[in-house]
Image 1 (tube, one colour):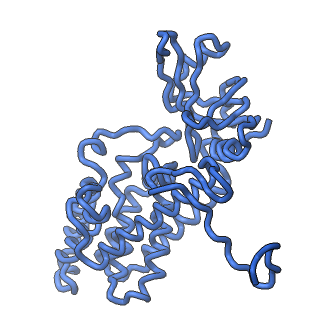
Image 2 (cartoon, rainbow, N blue to C red; image 1 turned 30 degrees about the horizontal axis):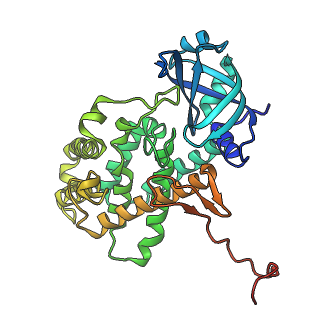
Image 3 (cartoon, one colour; image 1 turned 135 degrees about the vertical axis):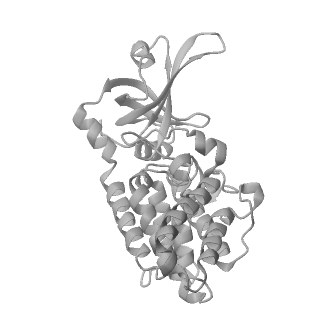
Length: 354
């Protein structure tokens, strides 16, 4: 059996029309919970996670591995080997499976993540650092540098969301870097935009998720944090920027005194970008976007999140017909495959009108 990631197995299982996919996968146990069937028979429900995905494994009481699986904890790392298939109601499931603990070497390799994901996130991190140093406003530059210095390692293991988009270790780095790329591309088309402010806003807009969606240093489990639950990532981001700002301004009061625009205006506009980035109160923002930069950030954020959902959906959604896939929430309807790009010089397919 080939060693695959959960995403690779899910993708293969969704394309096999009911046929099983034999595979091995290395995962961390996110949770192991005792359950009862409707007939009051005990079983164990395991939630398993790797760098990019998760699945649920139900272990019935008559399975040979029931006692072993019931003793697993969130500190356990295992290999699950078996035949995988995609269930319409329950998602990815395994049959004829076995489990064993991972060796230290296998655990270390798993925690590093797939090589392609690791390389992409390293590239994105370098892009974020490079882009921050293009900011000319010394206050925003200093604030961004202080944030990366103090919280960079936590940032690099934080997900952009618990579900739906970039919901993986390092996902926030991917999301932030892509948003910065979009901002830099559109800024010349809209010269009224303050690019320094927009880039800083992108860096900080989800900074509260370092508490709301942080993953542990040595695992793929996205723990729940009391601060994240009680306050939420927007409020945490506002608090974080204010705390960093106080530290910086205390040592730079004289240097910042006569800068234009005024330092207090810079602080308030950055806070507005964080507070308004969800766009509407019903989606968690305390205020609607009221500046060009806030509106741009809101739409850039939405664009990158939605396109990520499309990309993931094509990979895992159930095919309904040729080029049509089942709905992936929260997208509004069934997915339809994009029109392929025009390739000059290729002959038309049979039956195509000229």
